[in-house]
Length: 300
Picture 1: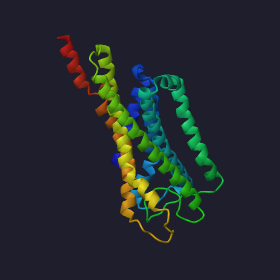
Picture 2: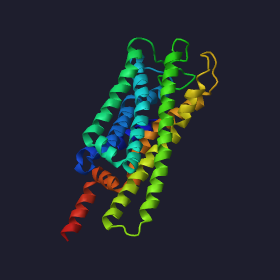
Picture 3: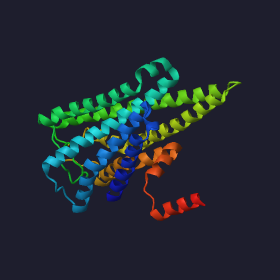
Picture 4: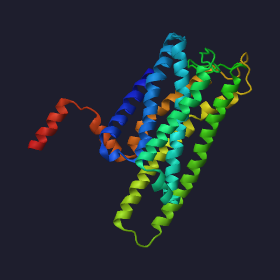
């Protein structure tokens, strides 16, 4: 968990740096990518370290306040990536099917407004039951060392609400991804079937294909890696608090998989989108010896 935490915070911090400093990446599409990266940075700073410390100590030792913070942030950072990826895939789908609608509603300013709206809605929806005492967070050693809502009758309504929202976002992302993938494949077949294609259009199509691969990779890793977590939430519906039907190893495995996604996010973006990979490599500090060698070769 400590290695996962270190890799996640390093990779996503570099991504935020590159997306912020390079003007070429200041686009409407990268607004959602930056927000998704910020979600992973928050996960690395506010969720992972406490779980790693609890796994080392074997118990929660940070108090109830930090438990409430971790549980609240964990729920927000479960909903936000699903929403952001759904909007990103829907944007690509509309870019092919409804170009005028896409240009009108997915400008840079409106994309920023969509991101801010998602953040505000998620925080407001979750903060009211938390502050009013309708939901509480606690550690269950029989599950995993992660602050979640207890499986009690008093907390069951909130647990059902959380599970329904998570499942709805998960299914919405799955459906829109299938629709977008089918539309993209059909659009590519129609494009290359034309007799005459200009060089400019070929370059635009090649760039769009690279972007589609990166988006497909980000969506696939969320849908596959988070699936055990979603399945466990569904199985927990009929469970009574005194009955442990799911082994602790399954809870731990789903927790580790949930934390693997922030690690894979910069790797997927760099591997599937070469311009971004080059900027990431430039952002990584190199040894002075290597720099001196490059300067010497340039002088020669």
